[in-house]
Amino acid sequence: QVQLQESGPGLVKPSQTLSLTCTISGASINSGGYYWSWIRQFPGKGLEWMGYTYYSGTTHYHPALKSRMSISEDASKNQFSLKLHSVTAADTAVYYCAMQMDTSLAIDYWGQGTLVTVSS
Amino acid sequence: QSVLTQPPSVSGAPGQSVTISCTGSSSNIGAGYDVHWYQQLPGTAPRVVISRNNNRPSGVPDRFSGSKAGTSASLVITGLQAEDEADYYCQSHDSSLYGAVFGGGTKLTVL
Image (cartoon, rainbow over all chains, first blue to last red; front, side, top):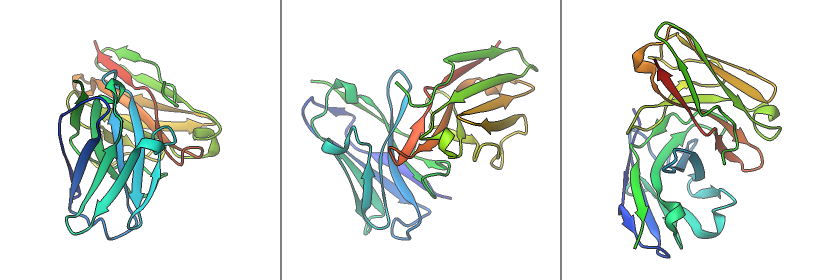
């Protein structure tokens, strides 16, 4: 059974960088065939896919976020991470890491989510 | 503003049925991509209740069913129970984003 766990600061100042890590258990980020994603949920409850990493480091990002985000992998720790630069209050959300077998399939596995608030 | 369109809320009495609609476009549902449905209880992550338009994962009651036609999909819940009260989201793949797109969510109230 795959389990995902997000970790990182719950409060980030405007203009700074949001950094989160997802620790994977029950699967290997190195095994290939899986898409490891970051998804966020705004306070008004809307969900937004942000991007994913797959096939040992290949990444794809939402066009609206591409210029200020990155996703990286750390195979030695079986983790993947999110960096979102130049944050504003509009980036306040619950951030989920998630996994799916293919981009056309359901997102079967989700972390519990972590609330990140952008405020001075 | 969400890419897929859902009604903000639906309600029904225990034992009744409700239908939640999800409308997309030619770059997602209309392009033939499957629709998946998630249930989200307060304070928890979404969980799949219908995958690939009409498939129930293990553990999901057969009161949940789904369908898809054209650029739209529907989730039907029959024999409503109090435990069904939750937010429901549809999701598909979008060929423009090459990523997931979601509906804005529908709050189901069991009266």
